[in-house]
Amino acid sequence: MSMELIMGGSAPLTMSSREIAELTGKRHDHVVRDIEKMISDVGEGLPNFGDTYTNEQNGQQYRCYNLPRDLTYTLIAGYRSDLRLKIVRRWMELEAVTIAPPETPEQLALRALTGLQTVVEKQKAQLALMQPKVDALDRIAGLEGTFNGTEAAKELQIGPQMLFRWMDTNEWTYKRAGSANRLAYQKRINAGDLTHKTTIVVRPDGTEKAADQVRITAQGLAKLARLVPGAHLRAGDEGEAA
Image (cartoon, rainbow, N blue to C red; front, side, top):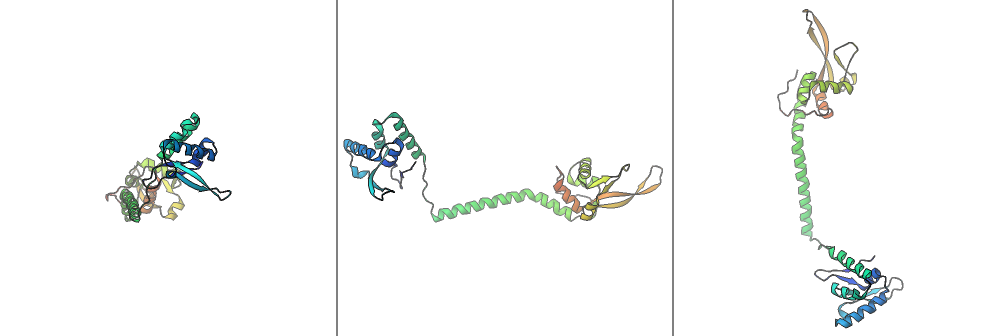
């Protein structure tokens, strides 16, 4: 369906005779005839509403009319009810259309600047949210030494058993059959995330034995902070390195 909407500046909205013909299924020349008779009957001047259009098939020009709402409704008063309803609904559609005036270069520049400022503010807000985590990672990266499981869990603000379970099920640590001590996967040692430290354990009878203990490096702790669900590095500087 064509949308022959005539609306420039403060000019009134009009509907063309061509669109009226299309909406009602009438021949355009018959609609033109009805318009000319109506305008004559109501005492309006034809030149006030007259126009021309070029036929795409033969290139010739023909007359047409652009009617305001009151004359459009007057024209269709004698049409069938279903045809009148089509015209009324089309008018409601046209009147619902809001045509904004073109923006000036100054308005375009102001809108672009406002959009840029919005983006910058969003980025600042995101950085503010990320900063505590960044500070915590920087602090961990600057620590020397290694952490045992309990110390690491404290830094990650999760329970030690939760950390141990995650490391056991994600190929960071494992236990040999019949052994209570955890060992580090070699690939984690090679990556610099884990290491082994030999400690002296005193038995209940007073004798001593050497035992390997898995230690988590600062690099490994930073990785765990990103990987372990619920882990959050402390932003403070009270972590203990061993």
